[in-house]
Image 1 (tube, protein in one colour):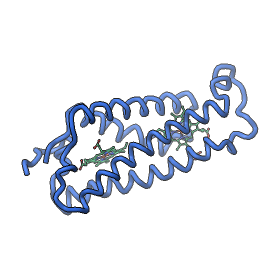
Image 2 (cartoon, protein in one colour):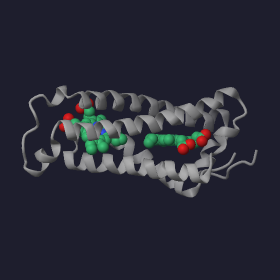
Image 3 (cartoon, helix red, strand yellow):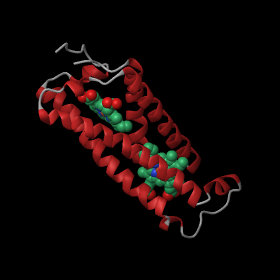
Length: 162
Ligand code: HEM
Ligand code: HEM
């Protein structure tokens, strides 16, 4: 099982803290902090994707059992959902005129909660929360039930050469 590039490992764990944090506490943060973190996550995911393409794939693509191949579309779905959440977040800023609200201490528009981009952002963040919960359970299942040392690919323990 081939490990990920060290930069991908660091970015995975950094994002594994930032994304759940914003998912769980996003609504309680100030708009400025939320926007800054959200845009940073989008940028870090783009950088991760760039490094991923230039350093090659990890062991998923050498998966032996057909069910393990599900990891490929599942990981693509995580990327898609994160970019969807960031894009709809930027959509809220534009549709809700939030730059003006932040710079001039203005009020949110009357129809703020009805903005299509906000509703899409809410739906996508809920789906992302579910998909990431499954992702974490699947990783733990692989590591501790199937004992295929999947964490080795992300920097924990020595990876197996098989
Ligand atoms: C405790 C939490 C987490 C654990 C234990 C975990 C574990 C793992 C493991 C073992 C892999 C490698 C799977 C493989 O290549 O076969 C992986 C890949 C991945 N994880 Fe996580 N993960 C966690 C949280 C997250 C979070 C919160 C995100 C989203 C931001 C995330 C996004 C991804 C992505 C996108 C990949 C695929 C990487 C690629 O192939 O480019 N993970 N994770
Ligand atoms: C992966 C990154 C992001 C996550 C996980 C995330 C998560 C969330 C969550 C959980 C909410 C609360 C939804 C609700 O009311 O039920 C929210 C609202 C919001 N998000 Fe994000 N967000 C992200 C990125 C962004 C970005 C990039 C922007 C804008 C540039 C943004 C702008 C907003 C705004 C304006 C709201 C509404 C705030 C309010 O109701 O007071 N988000 N986000």
